[in-house]
Image 1: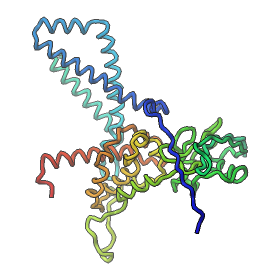
Image 2 (image 1 turned 30 degrees about the vertical axis):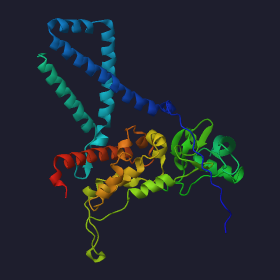
Image 3 (image 1 turned 135 degrees about the vertical axis):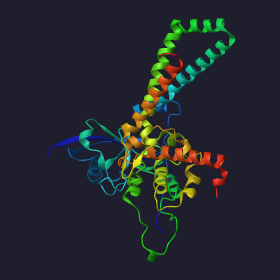
Image 4 (image 1 turned 180 degrees about the vertical axis):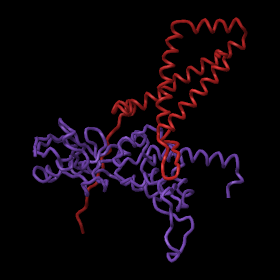
Length: 134
Length: 247
């Protein structure tokens, strides 16, 4: 009989809250996830704008006036920066999720991500057209 | 050939005598072209024969020598000393219990790998006389990248989800399930979906992408997991909107 082997595996503790500070790649991941808060906040603001519009011209004018305040402008700048970061980081990941195989080859990553940018541009143009920009 | 003095801070843990692991500093003369595994072997041969770690092939094929090198999951046989100018911190793979020194308990991964049935489940079984299961180069290309996994578990050590939710099936097991699901000869997808389309399967993944960044074989597990998510989502919609498609 072999000698009895002592086993006492040790599990090393992980930081539960600030775990993402362990490595820059986790910080980048958290930044991408965090960016959605600004997108959510901007969406809520648009819904509020619709509500004001439904309440009548006076309420809507008040809403527009509030948008011109320095605080609102700062918020817009942040929202723009974070939504650009959000979109760019996610578009960069699209080739991983949806590869296109043609025969024995896959379409280059740039084509898949590029198609998403093209779609983004197209939708933006439609929105601008609906808003009467042209 | 140039030599240099290399300082290694190695995490030691002896289950028979230690309550907690501690770092031990080794200082050995190494050749510049050596890898960290060579340095560890040199320590074991000349300084401390009690140092425990796993290794076998020394050529990034067997997947045994995965460890944390300066906090990054790496194969010790593929980490060149010349890339580490200062003191090199060597720890066992993160997220796994430590058995002794740099040796981890990998039972959890092995159990998960078994659950995803990472082998061919033929669509139609046929007798040997009927010949081999044939496949075109394009059909092979569809999954080939995912066959390169060497089960080194670096992806598990990099995955923050696995660190926090140990029930998560994890990158390598799901990637290998995807590899067989993508195989034109295979008919076992429904069996594997039971494991990988579950909450503790692919849906614990939040696409940090760390698995793909550390993979020494460029398998890109994160890509496999996102494709499993898309396919599982399509399954769900088909099952709920077109139930007559289900057999």
